Image (cartoon, rainbow, N blue to C red; front, side, top):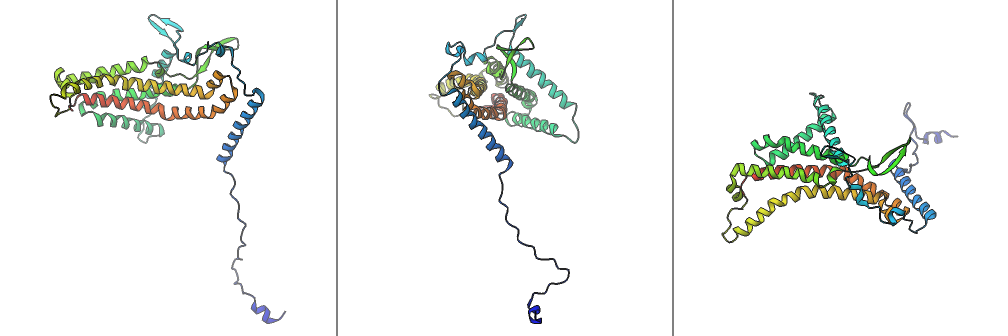
Length: 329
């Protein structure tokens, strides 16, 4: 090898690192979340194929469905378990007692652990306090806010706990029982006290009395009726508008009670139907399995969003109605 050939080679400095060789590009694999999703979808699809292969597409109604002795609405009946004087103890009363107990225990637990440097639970409670204070302050004057802030906050907490409790399956279905170690245990069921119309109606009647009381107290009986009327009305328009305003006052009973009752009842019925009850009614196991993901999705939607939203709406409408009664249009 000649010296000219050696000189033609590129000279490398001493201590200089060798040039890195290009690495082959790695193809991105499937993420863990996608793997879980595909696995769940595959299990769901395999279940449909399995049930079609085993049961076919022919209806197989159980005897209680065929003779119409089973009704979906039976789950919301309040069968009396026992009586304590004039009080009939049933699952509706049980859920109310559980709500009161849970609410009191949570508030006591939080109040005894307040710190200057709050933890996550205290931050959540302080956020909730500010939210209720904002609802009251934005819709009522200072005097009414100080007076009714505890009521607005209590209604919010009480209804929220009641709604959330309604999505926990508990052994309260006394119509259906199973045997455990020789003891007959009521079947597990999701139930909310709001699905009994008497519950939201009693709360609404209390709010109705309060805002009318504040209106009469602030304006006087005649002045309160006049305050319902918009200003600047002609004499011809005043009578029909007055009737409409009076009706609208009583319709607030509907706007509070029916909204809470209907939303919770419809949500629980949808969960029951999509989570298997529809398949039982038509006698098709395949339909029950196929609709199960939809039932889970509705359950999560109701438990995460609707439970809190309905409690918020009831509380803020309470503040609006009380505050509006002490103001003139």
